[in-house]
Image (cartoon, each protein chain N blue to C red):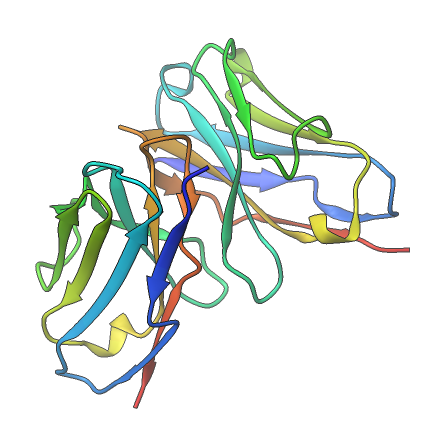
Amino acid sequence: EVQLVESGGGLVQPGGSLRISCAASGFTFMSYEMNWVRQAPGKGLEWISYISGGGETTYYADSVKGRFTVSRDNAKNSLFLEMKSLRADDTALYFCAKVEDNCLDVWGKGTTVTVSS
Amino acid sequence: DIQMTQSPSTLSASVGDRVTITCRASQSINSWLAWYQQKPGKAPKLLIYKASSLESGVPSRFRGSGSGTEFTLTISSLEPDDFAIYYCQQYDSLWTFGQGTKVEIK
């Protein structure tokens, strides 16, 4: 079964850092591009980051550019999002999603990041 | 950046109704549009890709159409399981979601 499981979310102070992870199983992870999408409480979906299968190419939404870094460890079937200089408006449920023909065909259940003092 | 605008924001309907949601792109995205369904507390689910192609396992009552800047998602006969929030998403240039349309029980 194709599965994505996010972890590492939690409460962090404004200006702080956090690294969240996404463990993939059931498919050849290295062959697929991956995205991160977030959803603030009661709000819609916001795409925030992309990484190619080999990790050479990354893209970011303007809202996180320069603060967030996406990476992956294909040997461990894992995707990461390093978040720095966190702000209150980064508070959200963070989803990882597998990319198939540029669509997000498999999603994890998400991990919650709360930025608050 | 490409902006996506959905209408309406909320739609009240009854089981058996035909429902149509519209999505407009700020510039042409050809047919690079997907539709997702999200239920409370759950991850989004891909329904339609390339504007009109049905994802495997998705019921045929869901139909997508359009190209360029105007797209629609139609549910031919609403079922109880269809009450949810629907998002369009362009993937012509990176990815952008619409703000969502909540389909609620009338």
